[in-house]
Length: 112
Length: 114
Image (cartoon, rainbow over all chains, first blue to last red):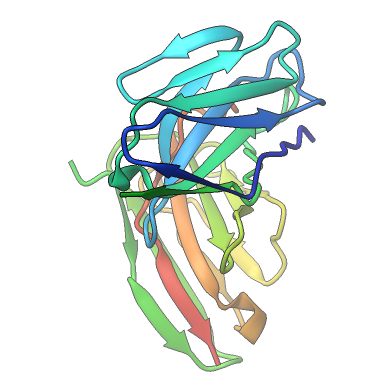
């Protein structure tokens, strides 16, 4: 199983850029890296996904180095509403079902 | 578009009672999942279904059963509830049962077993 390691918590202030790094040393060749966001009392929500290099959408950017053993989620100019738990996930090896492993995630607190 | 609905929103249940958590999706997704989330922890997969008529065990299946009679519905049953099953339960679905496919989550059911 491809497990991930990410910081338990982070603090930031409004307007700052936040970078959350996740390590996944056992990532398989066909695995994608996916980040989800979870607000209190809600289910997780997809943020961004990538396989290699850099991916950007309207919410965040995802940086993946060539060895793919880590990835960094970048949130530009965070606001109070970005306070949430962020999960980094990688898929199971090929041939398996969609069994995403949710770790404890990174609890981001954005302060005024 | 409703997406995924779950019922009930919350429930307090006596130990030993039977309980079925309901999950319905209107996106015609092939795959559906049940997770539990304990306080301060991540989600753990209980059961999954890659397509109607098939189910499989996830990481923590003991004490739970599921069925997938059609595409839209994926009920989770606790045959005889125990206090350790107190948790928030999330249902999710994805178009395809592949690890790269985005999962869409319901609002959750908060279950307390006394």
